[in-house]
Amino acid sequence: MNALPAATLRRAAALAVILNGLFPAVWIFLTSLKTEAELSQTPITWLPHAPTIANYVRAFHDQPLALYLFNSLTVAVLTTILTLLIATLAAYALGRLQIAYRDLALAAIVAVSTFPLVTLLVPLFQIMRALNMLNSYGALVLPYTVLSLPICTLVLISYFQTIPIDLENAAMIDGCSRVGALFRIIVPLSAPGVFTAGLLAFVNSWDEFLLALSFNSAARMRTLPVGITLYQGEFTFPWPVISAALIVGIVPVVALIIVFQQRIIAGLTAGGVKG
Image (tube, rainbow, N blue to C red; front, top):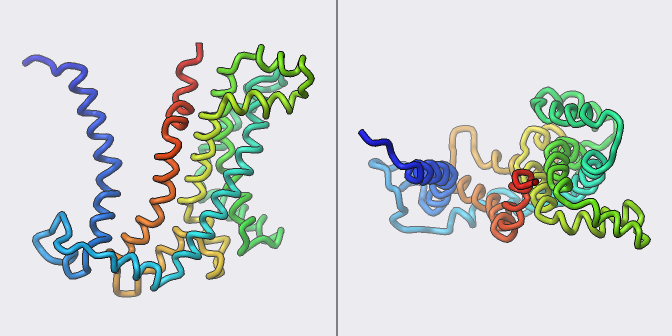
């Protein structure tokens, strides 16, 4: 038997990856358009017989979904801004300057990024309680920033190293300080990497559940992942309504990826084209 062409195998692998990523989202969307009666009938129906947006109306009516969205958006935006600011400075120092113990610092960053979140829950909770920050945006923004910094710093290091150092030197000769050269030359030329790091920080904070459940227990401070769990009752699971709430939560991330997809792809592949 002849071996399959390499191009065919690549296409098959790409199709498998696409289906694995898209099918759950498509199925959730189709479920959000069905009634509970149709969802429970057998045999299963793949497409809704009579699509309805009533589940989306219920999602906003049964729980304060708009408040959950606002809280999640506020936390994610603040986390992204703070993470990018700190990660940019750290990546510049580690990627462009000759500093002592650079390799050790990089190894520490990689090691810290592998810590399971559950092992950090208790110490982080004690710190937030000692700072009197529970049930506030800061209770999530600060830990999320710390958790996003390792991967964002590594992404930016990889990209900063592709920028010719002569451009930075020329800017400093023309009167820029080192920090000025960083934010006027290096960062604008590293826009794809910055967008990629920002998206990673945004998504990490947007999707996080454990810390949000533990640190912000007040109803007014709940984020979207925590709020979605409240739709289920003790004996009932309104899957169409829950699916509608999930789709509402997916939309902002999908919109960001669609708008910035070219910059994000360039940022992810920057380290592989360094010559």
